[in-house]
Amino acid sequence: MSPQIQPVLATVPLSPRHPHSVRTIVGLSVAALLFLVMGGGDLATLLIGFGFLVHPVQAVTDKLVRWPRQDRVDAEALTLVVREYFYNAPAVDTKGVRELAAKRQLQVNDDGGGQLRIALTGRLKPSAAGSRPEARMSFKCGDVGLMDFDRLLQNAEGDPPVRRATDRMRRPDTGAAA
Image (cartoon, rainbow, N blue to C red; front, top):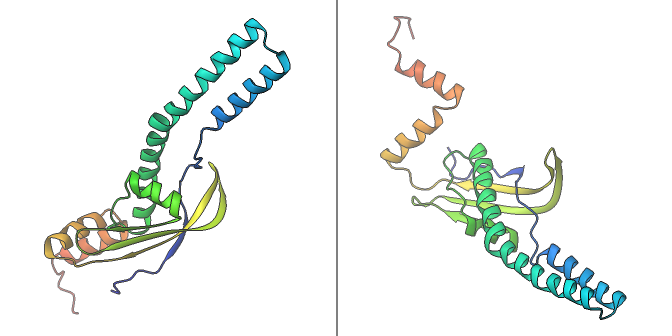
């Protein structure tokens, strides 16, 4: 087995990243436009002032609550996609998802010297959930000890062809000439 598995092109489930809250910018723009159009009337000024207070609160909520939650969901989904191709690859965490979104490439090392590399290609592929970015993924296995080998074999036995092969190996010889 070669230490480097061939790179795979796959779509990855990443949410679109915005460095700002779109709702906040639209809300502040509408409030400023209403202030200019309506003039400085008492009720209009009060409503516009309320808008200026609400939208930054929404921006802080987005940054502190919604985006970290979305990063966790993206990390779990990305780990599932990676494990679909490389079952013994390390898991991707939320920090890795943020790095992938910012730098367009990610490298995750595991305990045994293995290395997972993910690089976004810049192309979008249509899917049922909308357009998803395409990524090139590769995994290089590290040092595999006996305990790690047993764990890898147990994980691989979930695959039907591997399970049939191990069952054949464990069966007592039927007496057929080899």
